[in-house]
Length: 88
Image (cartoon, rainbow, N blue to C red; front, side):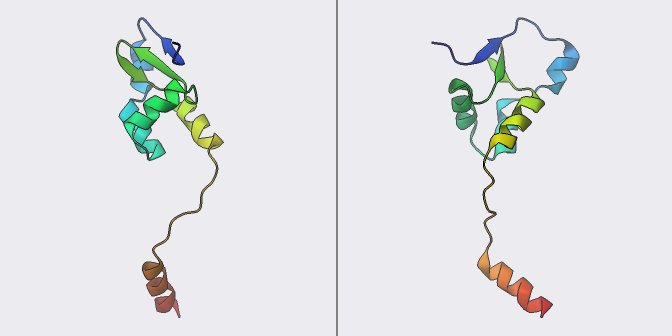
């Protein structure tokens, strides 16, 4: 079964520093590491495999984020009310 992962035998040291880990990507996308792995498996997010580890190009992660639909920001209504009352 193909998983959408490019296998790399050896990466240059500068390339390795620029790559993101699964945890880094999960933090950027506000999701779990398992969800990041699932996105790779579904070929939604490109990744490279270095041995057993997945690594991600920052540009690929940004491109994925740009494709996501914009969702409204959750607002705590109590906090919003206190801010508007203090401005009045």
